[in-house]
Amino acid sequence: MSIGDVIVLFVSASISSFFRFDSFIIPEFLYFPLCFVSLFYIAFMVIMQAYTKLDLSFLRFGIVRLTISLISAYAVFLSLSYFTKSSGDISRLWFAYNFVACLVLFTSYRLVFGYVLYKTGTIKKLRPAFSVIYSKSYRNVMDAITAATDTHRINVLKCIELPDLKADSHFEDQLEAEIALLRKSVPDVLILALSKEDRSRFSAFLPLISAMPSEILEFSTLTTDNLKSERGTINMSSGQPTEWVVVAGLPLVRSAEQPLSGRGWWIKRLEDIILGAFLIVLFSPVMFVAAVGVKLSSPGPILYRQLRHGFNGKDIQVLKFRSMYTECCDPVTSGELSQVKRGDPRVTRFGLFLRRTSLDELPQLFNVLNGEMSLVGPRPHATNQYALYQGKVDTYFSRHRVRPGITGWAQVNGWRGETDTDEKIRQRIACDLYYIRHWSIWFDIRILFLTLLSGFANKNAF
Image (cartoon, rainbow, N blue to C red; front, side, top):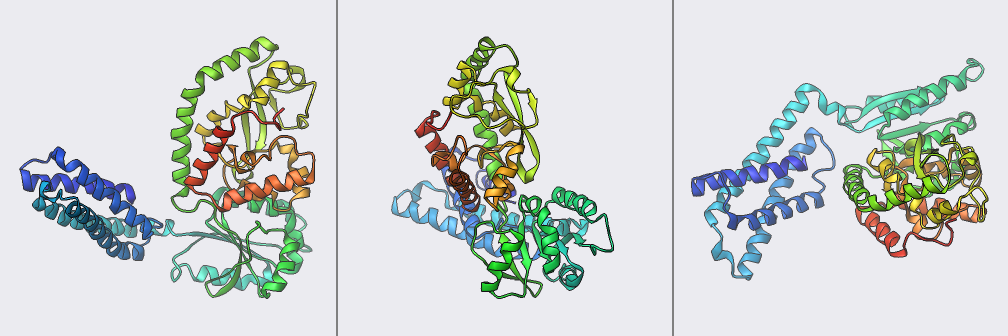
């Protein structure tokens, strides 16, 4: 929608130029006013949350928002022009034409767009997607959610009923298959309505659920004080305060918020593509020298691929410059190697230099462009380390709700290298969860700046 608004702004300017100057070409002296008004209009629309979702009622209210934003943008520009005594250089008639053209095109664009969405049925697919996992005793929760699809403008993707343990001996296999399909669909909101008996049965599958980038709500009739001890039995807390919400008249507790909701995913992906491509070009001479050094220092492949947990708990192959002797590592390993320790004999002399300067991580820029990783995010861990971390930190798998990063909040705070103590593990996971809850584009820029400021070398890198 925001991209469409930008196009409309420039089309309106071209139409206004035709009526004022008999040419669709915008005069050069109007470039600055046009860009100024456009930027302020988009800024006001973002402040008023006009681009958060697509819904027919939201589009209707959007006409009011765009009118207010357009008037505000023009008011700011004309006020600054008056006080800077530059209003005499502006074509007032062109601005009048442009204001009317913008208002007409913005309104028409939204009405036509909304009509097309409604007639094609696409509008229902754009609604927030809900999924429910429930016990038989809480079937009323599923019924209430499905009955609220129109009144609450939601789309129910999948409902999973936990079978009776005595009635179905293949419970775990069936549930694992259902959850695999659920993870692929990635609903916006996942509601858990589990009986006390099913909570313990379902606990083995919670790591897979907690890695999903969905808002997770739990049905509960408990008080807030009792809820804290009850939540401990299912192990779903993401480290955030207990918060009650009401959906379809049901009392629910938010266990995890949806990370990077709305346009945050697109902003972060755009950041990764632009900066990732720039850094590949910038560091290409360094990567070439490193590749030659790896090849000359020991026989074997230049790159090392390790299987690690990625976004939504999926396995990804992370690229690194090989820093160990070939006989000590399989080029396509399944993550079965132990962590590298200080003075590890498996590391080559040139590999030690690469690891100390973190230059062995540079090939992961290609993982970023491929969409498997991000520039900033929780560091991906080898798949064989899951039991180590999960046993020490209950919320470990919640760190997979965003793409793993080359650098992260934990790394710039000094929590990198070998995790040989429980405190190091807890601090690293705490930093990862803090980053996910407080993500913003400025937070990413801050982490990248601190990474460059501190340099690639680190005392914990070996």
